[in-house]
Image (cartoon, rainbow, N blue to C red; front, side, top):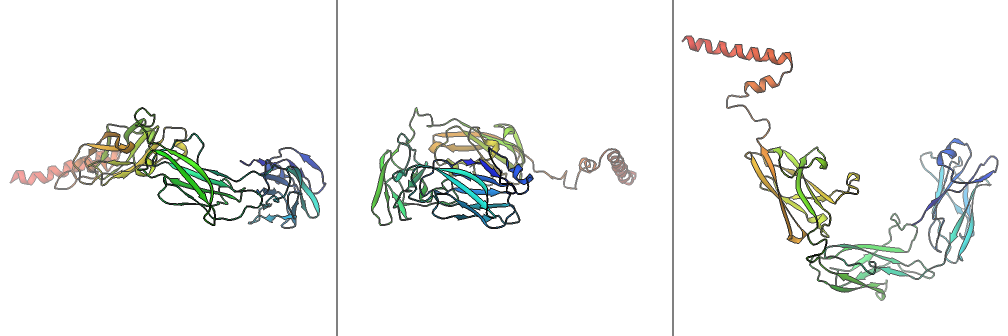
Length: 389
């Protein structure tokens, strides 16, 4: 991990230098002050990138950074949209010896900020599949990484193959990912097949020419009776309103009108690998099977993993109590909740049109009483002639 450090600020007008963690607001409030942030100032290896950010300068150009760790002075690029700042991501030269080196920022021919950069020794290329003690389940995702940052490294195409994979997997570098600072970090994410057998597999990394680079073992074992994750700790299915919150979910007694919508909630402390994509809720009350997807919102942080899916209740459904079933853990867990379906909203009061109650409900307060009296008087007058005849 690379840490951001803010340690040196110099007032352009006076050339005075001070050290310490100066907040960004200080640079904005002091005309001509520079605010330097280095992301990657510690424990760098030759070839790694350093993110240099200088804020608060009025200059639109002519801002450079020099350091013995760079082969040449680095020209910083100004921000767009009128923002006062400059930025660059230079790489440490591949032949820099371990040590601590100064870094200087100049603008308009004057020094505006200073800092230091720490460099450590290179290390051999490393291929990782998992930590040595990891045991993976069928369907589980695992990360592959190849750290090839070393002198003389070349090639951009690396592939991993194993009898535990459905096909070969290509490793790539993501300049916007967590390893942005290492231009020779290649990664991939692969899901094991659901039907992969228990065993120890060999994962082989090959280079651009197809020759093996490194190999790593991979242990796969399905959950067995007695394992903590064999049947997990499932809770549900529970239900809450379409516009409601999961905290209000109820396993039994939740009511929904025919033709309406309801959310289905499922919880499991140890879900099977891959269930994020295959959990379903089924019910004769629903228009079809309902996919339940992992809730990755901030509200779900720190809670038991939960899965939510919106369901549409069939129109014209008779009122009653309907089962809703979720099957998980490769069929080892089956739970059923019940949903109360009521008549569809907007039902008329009879074949002759809306009843008096619906007419009165449309008015409020004193207006409702006047409407009720008018309806009663009208009905009496309509009945009067027929009674006389």
